[in-house]
Image 1: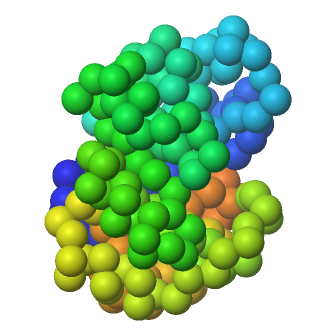
Image 2: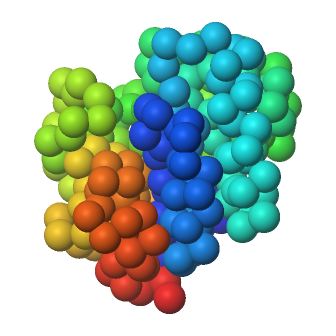
Length: 209
């Protein structure tokens, strides 16, 4: 996850079974994507491992970082490129000790400059702010303004991720404010034209063709 002009960071739907590997392949083939976050809930480690098995090779083939949401043990087990932690998940220090220095660790910081500074100073590889817009992907209680992205980019070199209800239509202020990554889920997987078309739309918006 290099610091380049704003890039796309895909977050999986909760259901990654069935034909989802084909959807992921189509999405990653459609344009540059920096990272894919594997986010499943309410399944065992064994089930999660089985679900991730066909997905990580697809990401590897496209040079896309495979990031596990919340679960440090799963990230270690499957050799993930990164793990994304919330404020209530396993601590950054513990995750770093278990996963080592080469694994990317991201931290959700909601709308808090204080939490972001703590994460950055604690060794996080990126911080995530949001939700910037209403989203059906998960319940949210924080609504930062785009200015927090501009503030972060002026005080820290660590990349920042904008997350929450982001679409092709509403993402421009976040790009202009300095987001290094746009984390998107529903706007890609639920696009009526398919995920490949959605990625191409974002690629055009990001100017990363």
